[in-house]
Image (tube, rainbow, N blue to C red; front, side, top):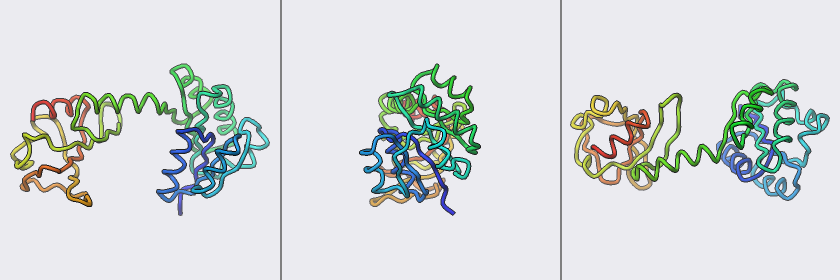
Length: 219
């Protein structure tokens, strides 16, 4: 059964999230006070409604307690609205509430009113983009926990033609290669320890952030 997700706030972050979740098969109910944004989202989400999510009666009609996840993606235009909405979602029994924060104080307040998870998209993107600037081989990076990352990177030139056995990445860098992306169109393959790496390969690895930097500098 598809996950049912409520997204409140259709700014750049909320709209992108609604589109991506819909593409991945989730049933998305998208909500905003601005009718033009609701009309835009209606082209790809399951349902889009013009609602003031700070109005307790209107929010209750969306049945957040029946959704798998509720995301309050209200952005810079109203921190007060995002706090009220997040608090109301928790009071209404929403099982998993995600709040969007714009700064550290906003994050603390959202946590105090009960958000299960608080994200700051701009801050997180800034960190990921900084990693890409410093490590030019990095294509994408996703934190998994405390200093543990899932990273996709191009094979450094010094590693081309060598096997994973030759490279001894776990021993030298503390890096585990979990998959290799190869070919055009690309296919994700289970890594073979004895197959030489090719020039256009991309490694998908699990490691610390520091290990990625050491690998790209010292491979």
